[in-house]
Image (cartoon, rainbow, N blue to C red; front, side, top):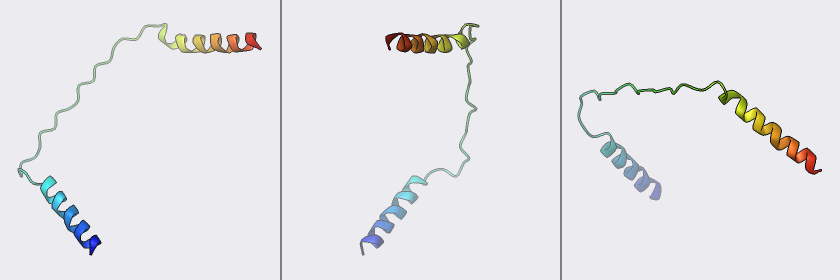
Length: 60
């Protein structure tokens, strides 16, 4: 009996969620803005990793 009540509740929620206009929804294309990257952006992370590894090696 509980499964029947749960199924009825889910059907009711699904029909309420899909209620609305029959017109096709207007979907706008997303606007993607890319910022110009500097030339040093690609080297910053490896240098930082090298400094952390060197500090760990020096502490041992």
